[in-house]
Image (tube, rainbow, N blue to C red; front, side, top):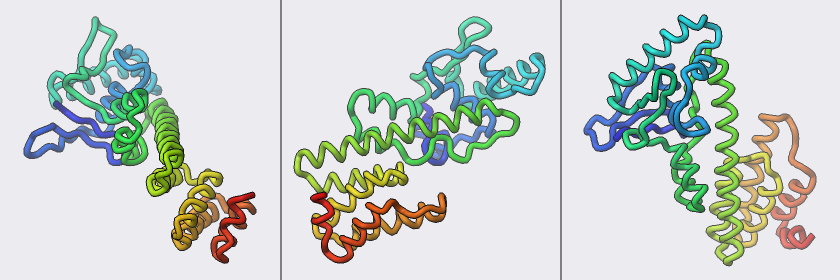
Length: 245
């Protein structure tokens, strides 16, 4: 069984092997990742792969490049690729697992906590290839979509924990959610209130300061007035008044 990790550092591993890392040239790794993770799951037409990965090549050159890419993947990874007729190609899920696919399967089944254990960073981060604008657009859109799914899962776990009165767990999941979507000030304020409410005023202020620094450095804007007011209230010990507003 081969494991394809797409969250954080993109890598291939042979499960159970002493030297588990498998190297594929970046474009071949990108093609493999696309076949494994692109929706709808299953088989993909060769014509569609040409548009994604070789949009500037003529059809003959692009088809030759795709055939060579698939040949090398088969040579390196065995029977992970499957074909149907002359035009369809896909992944044998019994031979290759993909963390992005498993992540979404767990989300769909409601197993949110275990799903988030798979989310180790941005989807296909750092996998850069030349001349494949279709892949670049797909990677960017999928990275954002999957990040939002992770954020929604963390926020849902925070809601559930808070409803059950487990504020420590709620804070943990709120911290995860804020890390995943650091521009959500409403979520940040909720994190600050719960953190300060448990007596960790310094923790609430640290969360605010991280957020404020990020907003100023990345977007050259200050936090919203209500966020700044909450930070000031926490610093002066008046957080509970803000929480009642």
